[in-house]
Length: 68
Image (cartoon, rainbow, N blue to C red; front, side):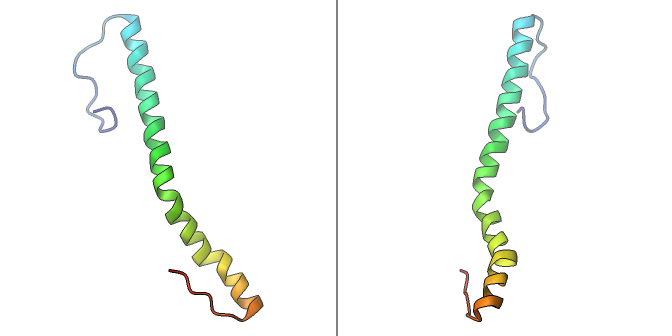
């Protein structure tokens, strides 16, 4: 519910509940961003090799490098 933008289910009246909701929302957002980063890091790494790094080596060595 936090990441979907629906907001809180009910109103929070005391300070400790507001602090908990704030810290939990920050924690959930950071965990979400970290997990997405970990999941997409291999894909990003593959594209970096495909478009930049392997092209330089191919020109120098004159060999065919196949990336799967």
